[in-house]
Image 1: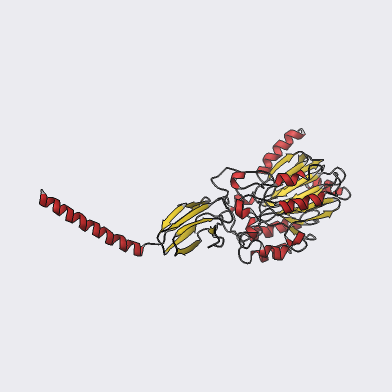
Image 2: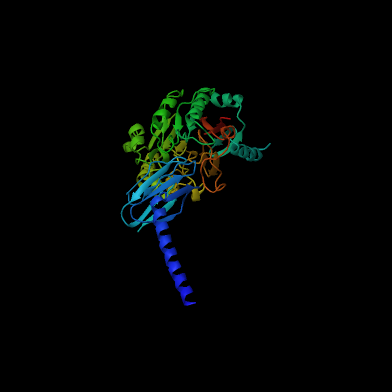
Length: 112
Length: 309
């Protein structure tokens, strides 16, 4: 009973270690987090990423939209259908943005 | 058919983008179908003139409803040039460009050089100014406007025309806004006019609450319109919503024009107000041009919306 528990614990540790390794590998190879623009909505509306992450927005609407920072830190041009905009976030903080053509469309990127 | 029934019938036709003639006498509308005979009859009265409103040309747009917005604008110019009576001028009620695409202002200017009218008056749409705060727009069209800021008035054969800018604050609040300075200017601008002067106001975003959840309204329009209450005939021509809608309030007739590029959904009829995704042939019946005729004396204003398809 005791030895079986030990095996189980060791096994669990190995699994956790393996998972950590796998996670690290996936993170290195993962595509940049994406925000989809659809029906005049940013999805997800709030996105949390690590410092140094590049976020990409994709416009799925036929109407052009922009990704415009409230603080004036960044602003995309008008994005047509299927066009993308990317920005790398190098400083921790909360970044609110909106669409300059449809200002009721809003979103947030939280960088930790 | 009595007037009310006919009006109701024609309102339905307007929704389908069919050509239609509105006549306003002292702010009360009556209507009849367009016919060449009717147009000739209207234009026979001395002092009569007509002008054309085009709107939302969105040059640079490419979507299911229209693969080439410049081509449909050229068709609209051909349509204007084929009118039985040449318009005195053209009013462009904004969104010349689709999201300020590079070169789009040049394309619109080049196409509109071909229109047989003395000149074209412009007011901006939010698509024309959102990227650079209007820098390019005002460098091209600010000349001759108040302080180079796009708003202006002029008189033509006894009718007073006022072009207003209501898209500069759009970026902040998502609805049209005129701002205190422009409204105060309007008050002074119309103060010397007699109440019998017909007034035409043109601006991009509707000056009435068409559908606020989609930003289809101008937040301070009521204040501006307050200065126009004493006039017997006020016509407000707007664009922005890519469809013909009409409302009469007292002596004020509100009218929105079709786009020359693509139609948008009826207010609230879709999750969002993006371009309708319909075949081009179908869309042609929902885009077009507005022809307006004034017949002095009775102050009638005839507004004719005609679709391309």
